[in-house]
Structure formats: structure tokens, C-alpha cells
Image 1 (cartoon, rainbow, N blue to C red):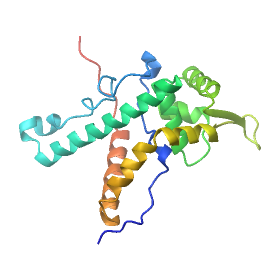
Image 2 (cartoon, one colour):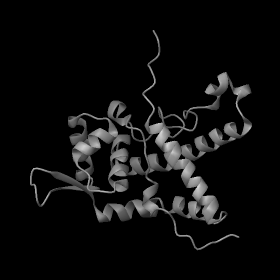
Image 3 (cartoon, helix red, strand yellow):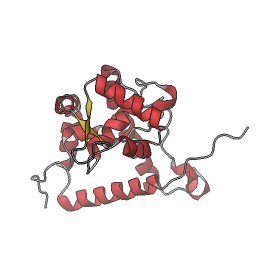
Image 4 (cartoon, rainbow, N blue to C red):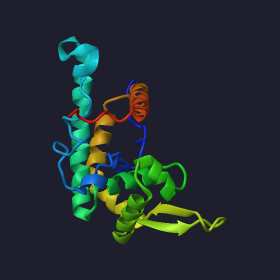
Length: 207
């Protein structure tokens, strides 16, 4: 039985989701999802590596990989447009997503660990975001040595408005499934995220 009353799992602005921190190296914000290193629809791990080749890969796994690449590409496309409109780097978008998704106040040290950046790179990123009005840095009330990074409310509203079409599309898609089906989808995505978080960086090309 289909139930339409389930609220969205995240607020509309939560779609600014993980973009890899390659902007720290190339500093390019406005690339499309198709040509951005590590982030486009053709760059997610393919099923050709499974069981030694594409012909041996299960058809369902192949279809899943294609769907994930398409979703990733569309989110990258919109996220890149937001970054370009606000003069942000890909790394800046990653930092915003980390601040938004955190379950506790974020510190520069946490961002350094989360994004795999140096202290200098994190400071430069936060400087850009603060100048652009997206975040503010405050001192902890109990320990003034600790700096907290907060998402500015006005910037959150601007992101929510920009990504509203994506949120509406997600809500329409969500309405096609009942709660039990959505729970399965969420379990899969959480499990996939956990598996990917445990992956080591692939070796560079041999010379």
C-alpha cells in the first residue's frame, strides 16, 4: 500500500552533496559533471571491473551502475552551476556540504580530516566562503581556542532556493514508493557510502 505522507529525509538544501576535493589541485569550479575529474557520470567505478569484465557482470549490477552515474552527473551539473554562480571552487562546495551534514559543530580540523586537505588549504577555503557570505567562524563559548564553522542562515536559504527544482524532482520520485521500499533504498545508499569511504586512493598511472 502506497503512503504519500512520508516527509523528505533531508531539507532541500541538503542536495549540495559530496563533491570530491579536486578543486584544491586545479581550482576549477565550473566544470560540467561529464568532464570534471573524479566527479562525472562516466567516472564512477564501472561494473567492467567486476568478475573480470563487462560481459560477466550481472545485468542488474550494470543497470545500477548506469543509474548511479546518471544521478551523480545530474547532481554535479546543478552543483557546478551553483558554484559558478557564487564564484566557488569544488573544494568550497565540499566544505559547505560537510558543514551542512555534520551532526555536531564543525571545526577547521574536522574539515581538514573530512576533505583530506592541509591546514593552509582549509584556511584558504574558509576565507573564501566567509568573504562570500556562506559561513561564519565563531569562538567556542567554553574554550576560546576552539573555532566553530557555521552555515549562515541567509546563505542556506539561497542554496535552498537554487536547488528547489532538484528537491521537487526528488519529492516526485519519492512519491512513487512506499515507506518500506524507501527504507531499502536508504539502506543501500548508506551501505554504499560506507563501502566507498573505506576505499583507498587508487594508484597513479604507471610510467
